[in-house]
Length: 220
Image (tube, rainbow, N blue to C red; front, side):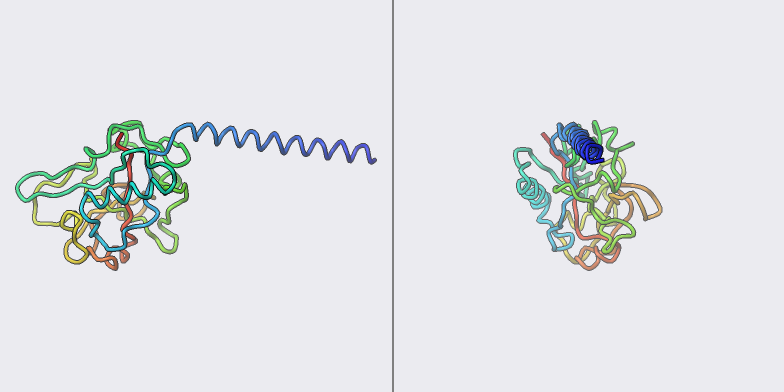
């Protein structure tokens, strides 16, 4: 009886080791791709005032550096507006791909896939630490991600509406176009252009399920 118990114990230990090895192998395979995309774990805390594109990019860079990914050139996925012409388009700021999340999962291989059929859902749209970002059904829901962008990733043509919180300098008047990283709500499944915010203050962003979070992409 003791011999059988010892044998069973050894077998259980070997199976456990094998299981850990398989899991570790899967993780290692995914981590063969370094992180080149993340949702910010926190916003700048001042509503739609990000300090312009430069301030938003700096926020992405700082968060990436904090997790050891600062050797890449990080850009916030944001568009701008101009009075007489089209502004800067988010899709033109982030390189050509491919992009992987913090666990090494492919989000999109290039700009076309990113804007037509990206692998962006709550499970894959992770923050820089590899953590899930709260979405619809969570408390608090922070799935409104600032973009100021149309679904194809381009800036809006000049019109009477504000889509970018005055080019990311307003924490009061105006509005910002947002996407949903979890692809739920807003009457559509757009990750980058779901609806407009109620305003540009931190409170206005929070009122529709936001926290001033951004998408960050490695552009190099």
